[in-house]
Image (tube, rainbow, N blue to C red; front, side):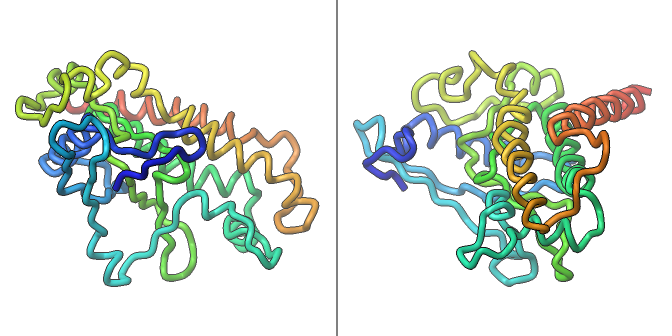
Length: 257
């Protein structure tokens, strides 16, 4: 729903292009086969904008049945690093301490590796990219309290489809809803750049936040001291991106045989 105000410098009124894009991406995902097994999303089933207005729209977003029933529990990435009011360790610090791993190894194994694999497959096999910042991505917490490689995405209006790439992959996007112009509504002028959103959103906005918090967590005794010569979380992301790209290349080679 639109808010007639700015929050953190962002206009919170939903415009017509966002409405069209959200419903268009929903259609792409619903028709898609072979999505990454870790990928889930909040469906956006209805979008409206008052006639004659460019802003002030509304998008109806549904909650997955598994979440409503309590079968699965997800938390936004930002909740992992939020400091409780009672001064106790953040959830991520607790999970790291319980694992017995270093902070860098835990984050890479449970967050960076599975999410980079998911992002790379969605981009390479479906020509789609999200805006994976810590508000838009939720991670599953298992019944045993551990992180699972299962990510729930919100805000389909933040997704970008590379329509030319999708056509090359065999997708047919002929009936997309349009409010203004197709290229404008679906970010086609900058689609190639937006497909590389993993580093600016997941890397610089989330992983770097963790990296900056680690000295304080270590000083408080919440996580173990850093291991000698351990790569930073940013370096870990870079290495995971290279590995995911190699695996994507091998999958493509096998598919062409």
